[in-house]
Length: 196
Image (cartoon, rainbow, N blue to C red; front, side, top):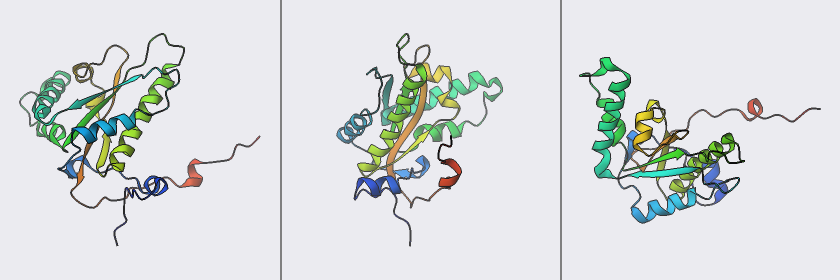
């Protein structure tokens, strides 16, 4: 019997069964505009020391995916001059997978008394909340990074300024196949009591 993932019968069940899906295995429907707004609004309810909101979210519409693919190709070729004329279909695939795409940026507030690391952690918390909120709405979601999350040309296209960076690409949709569990760390390997 297949294990049930993203069980929304209770918060505890959800947390115990939360599982990302692979964007390449996501099909329509994705969240409509109202559901996506709700998902993002929930994601913004995150720890934010100093109330700085040191993050920004950019939604990428379905009819913008070709422009996103072109951006990825330009940035890849700029970083890898020998790639011009090569097969860049993997970049097309990345740009077009899953029905819905959201880009999360870390935008630390320069000069704030809150350390940059804390502000970046807050952006990471928004990312986790995006996954939880999408799953709670009945969708499957995935958080991807890769070279395109660290490329300055790509980041600038999404409005990143000096000191900002892409936290990740969040793909949302409907699972087209059963989700698989992935290896998880053993509790006793990563948790210990403080000894004095």
